[in-house]
Amino acid sequence: MNKTLRMACLLVALLHAGTMVAAPAPDMQSALGWWRTFDDTTGQARGIVQIYERDGKLFGRLERSFKPGAAARVCSVCTDERKNQPILGLLIIRNMKPQDGEYGGGDILDPDSGTVYRCKMHLEQQGTRLLVRGYIGISLFGRSQTWQREAAPPP
Image 1 (cartoon, rainbow, N blue to C red):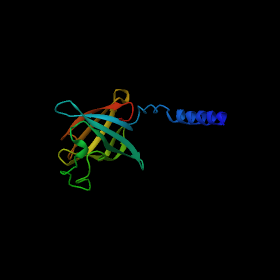
Image 2: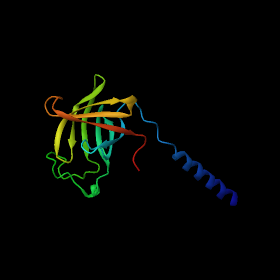
Image 3: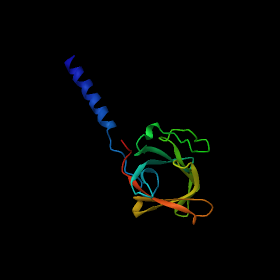
Image 4: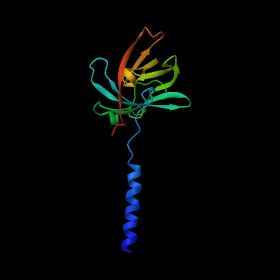
């Protein structure tokens, strides 16, 4: 019995060790992954966005916010299907496609104003930075943010 118990404990320990594999390194040639966003005015970190692929297009969801009270906030200023949806988990980037070395063709939501902008993004500094440009009409009329790649998902 004692030998069987030891074997069972060893088996459980080995199975548990197999699940503790480190997260794979991000693909630095792709925008997929977790990104720390920054306020364009103050430069302070605002949150973490996860960019993922679905049906050949990129989408971004706000996974973490550094603003106090974010867990209880909803997007009351949103005017589309995201109206009154929780800020955490909110889909802020939609339908981005690779285009000539960057991503475009989709949109980005500013959850503070509810405004939806056309969007372009491209990687910089060997994939450690993502330049995100939201604009209305043509790219000349918009604003840009530089996001910083996170090595792993937020805790």
